[in-house]
Length: 221
Image (cartoon, rainbow, N blue to C red; front, top):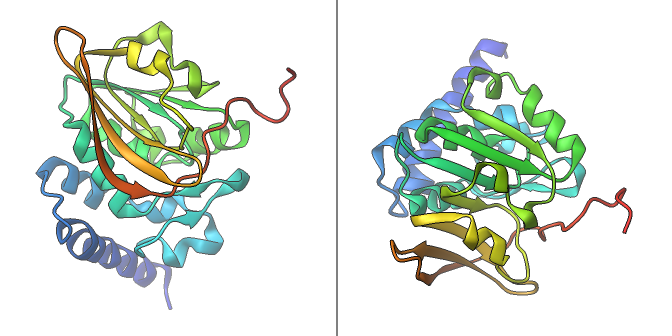
């Protein structure tokens, strides 16, 4: 089977993923659906799992991490209600798939990764390199990124046992944050900050994410 035919097959699988896994479950944002159609998820998946790139499941990634189920990526992104004026903070770059989607929808994306291997892999991805509005930070997501705060939206792609207060502080008035929270049982929450800086929390669905890392194993206490 030719490489060209494989690519055509993958394009078709991506289209079916959007129709059957994402639109079918109620995600309707047209700009988001267009971004999902444009960005080749299989180029963010380790080669040995590439044939499953458009399946309805999370997949193993590098450094003991995972790449989230496509529907969860879409649902979390839609909850942010992004537009082209927004500045976004992403906690957990991973291989950069979610990052690329955010870059399609927002003005600026600041993305933090604590694992050096993933930080390097994401930046080297040829899809990612097409975007000039992504800023990569190697660091501790629990601290957010004060240098560019406040953010119109914050998305966290690993689960802390509690919501770090500093992240809510770095959320702009009128902003939205999507974050999975929990240890043994996790809930995806939407947090909103009103213009007078009151925080509201809304549980969305049960999820299963890798734990949010406070520091890299090579770091000293």
